[in-house]
Image 1 (cartoon, helix red, strand yellow):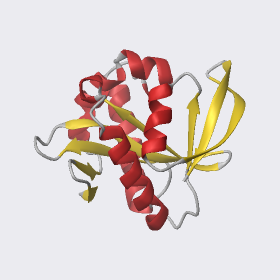
Image 2 (cartoon, one colour; image 1 turned 135 degrees about the vertical axis):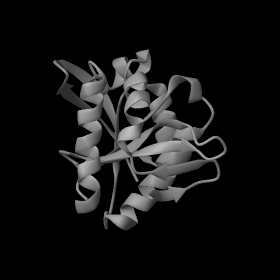
Image 3 (cartoon, one colour; image 1 turned 180 degrees about the vertical axis):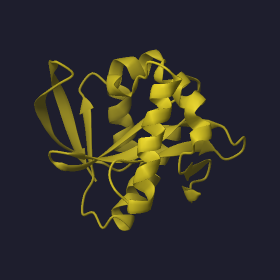
Length: 167
């Protein structure tokens, strides 16, 4: 079940037992602002999403999204994943609001991308972030990503200036 662990975190595959907490995270303001496609209308939609993600594990297909758990309390605190984008493979993550600003995001993104490069034989992994999301930029920098370029892209019915990082 565990994929890897860091000093403070366990990275493991999702189970359907995670549905309620994933739904609760999806209702937080930060998620609504930065990753609106991960906001679920109800528990059924959250469960369907987890079923889809879980179906990818055996075949090792993208998106490969897993749970982030605090090692000392066994609390699910968020997710991290690798997904296909036009440039290649991108890392994405979400950490519950009450667990933010504690260094968990940088810790998990660094460990997971290092693991992902080996596990999936990837030369590089991208980090793509809206320019105004300063926290995400800091996380990528702490996770040893290098700034590549600014980019304009249209998503969620709006044009946005994004920063692209690479590891």
